[in-house]
Length: 117
Length: 109
Image (cartoon, rainbow over all chains, first blue to last red; front, side, top):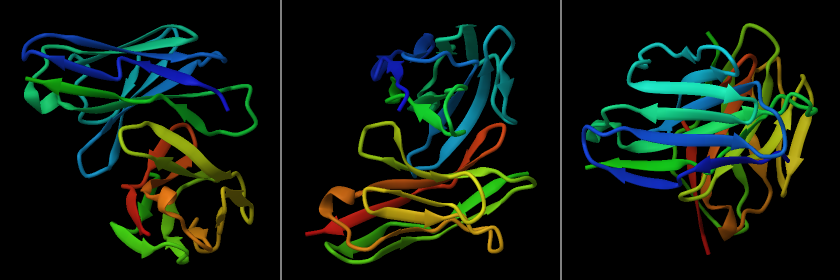
């Protein structure tokens, strides 16, 4: 299947700083990427849909000024957690659909474990 | 809106036992349905999928059938292994992918 690479896999930052997470589709062009946050009890929450060349679509309750999403090219989307606080500590996962593929499934990155201290 | 409901875990079974993880969905259209698996510290991997009613997805001994009449997509495996221990997510896809809350599976040797 298609490959999605997410970087970094782990990051520790100080409270008040910003952290950028990258999501790349390695062998296909993704016009749409998705960003999820996974809480400790397993549930996967869709944060936003990232569209190449246009503004991201945020889910209800997600602060767009807090979680900045940029999808500048067909193979790269970035999520920046601004002015991070300990409650932002979580596992963030990106995914992308291959528009040329047979199905409608998404392929997932390896995830980024963010710890804010 | 669309939603996915799957059975709460954790589920603990002995090796070679039969596995069922229930999943039901609510959707306005005709979504595709998926099961994803997540191993500790990793992202999600697609386990199997079905794109229309009565389709059966299968992979690695796991199966699930798209049942439109019962709006279900239950995951089954006839004989589980210790290596199947993971978290399993049921999901549906239309313009975006919606996940169930996940079911943690423990297989005891």
